[in-house]
Image 1 (cartoon, rainbow, N blue to C red):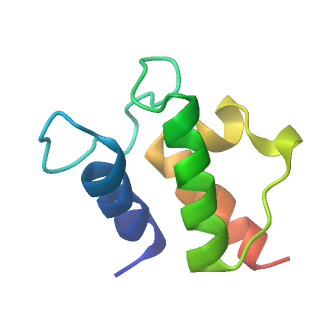
Image 2 (tube, helix red, strand yellow; image 1 turned 30 degrees about the vertical axis):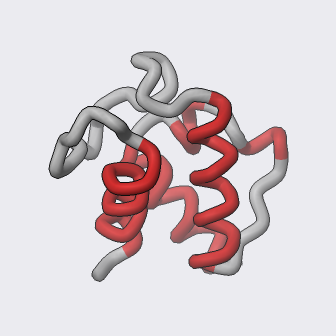
Image 3 (cartoon, helix red, strand yellow; image 1 turned 120 degrees about the vertical axis):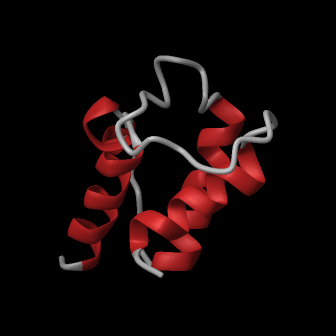
Length: 81
């Protein structure tokens, strides 16, 4: 399973409560309320533990966490550092 798929599965099964089976990779997650503050904290914890990355407060904007594609790209870039 690739990074994006793993992140999607975590969000769908651990954060969302609407029963959706999947996410559109470009669906806005922060601006549409899919990721609230608690969901964002849970996602950050998952990303740090699963992918071995450290995420700073200054990295939590729309550019990195705006949608599933951005999150996966961000994690991949953090892993390559």
